[in-house]
Image 1 (cartoon, one colour):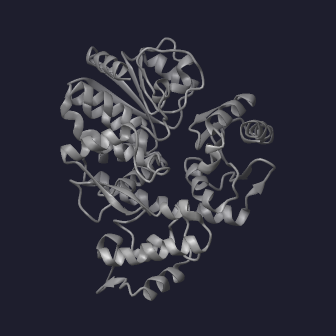
Image 2: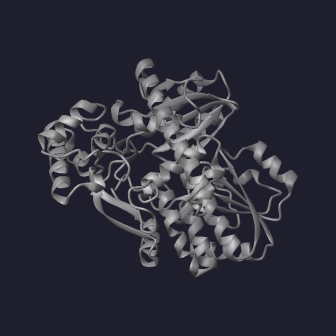
Image 3: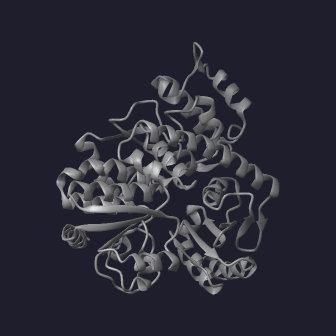
Length: 452
């Protein structure tokens, strides 16, 4: 893998102008930002485009522009056979669906690594940046944000593989730190009862989704929820208060037969951006990633990009406004799914949001529904300008049995004239309108083959 890293960095240094094309999610925005910063430090002219999907339309547009070199970050691997006529380098971690070789293609799956957990798109881009100039190790913070944004710490409760080496770079350079703490989202910014109310990895029986129960739970433990008039956040609690809460949550999970595996997920590594202000969205990698996602999902990638580049004024305030709207959108979307219901088939379950859920957040909604859904792959549909957006999510226990959603989405989408791909645990596709039933039939056929 190192040889490919070196080859890409040497190729980039030979060019005076580079076009960066990246994905719109947190990992993609972080990757595009890393690429931009490292090129700027080398004095290489460049511009950045963030796209939701690399398709024929985007490729044709690039061919017409005829850039000197295109650097694809967090995408590109799935379209290698269609990039003829473009001079490219690729740093992408998504599963490769074809066997066609390409020069300057950095993908962990080509080197026996797992792109779902070992390293992200921003991590691969960071490796190139670091090889170009050792001083770029400060960009390791963005790589960790990207990895966490892609939930690469979820399976093991910590970052592993090459992500671990990147994390150590960040610690050594003073931009990152990590410790063991509760893994629920909102440690820095949510009041404690809200942190418990919205806990979903794992869900807490009797508490998740129930504000009054969360308040009573804390009162029964003798936890003061306010410091004078200010709601206390998780980071405001003493070690003893945290221990009491975690112990009771673990006891609840075990007593409700949620299993030792789920109980272990409550605690794990959390990643801190050492140079950011405590108590803000930027101090915790998971919250920073959500801030970036809220920018990308609403066509405001330039806002997240500028925050990654260091803006802590206008762009940060605009990002926070988007984050507030993003949270409201997710609440409404979850309510829609709860009201409309999930349809169960023999091998999969699905819901069709139509125009009721933004196609750019339907994947997030599907992921949030997994803990509540039956142990079957969940397929989510939403209308889009290009047809129908499909997001697929599953429980990791099914992946361990052989399920690979990237293969499912790729093959089923092709069957109906669409395109798809992703990771084993989370994948997506875009298909023509009115092909959903045929698509689901093909999905079920492949899922049956994979896990019976």
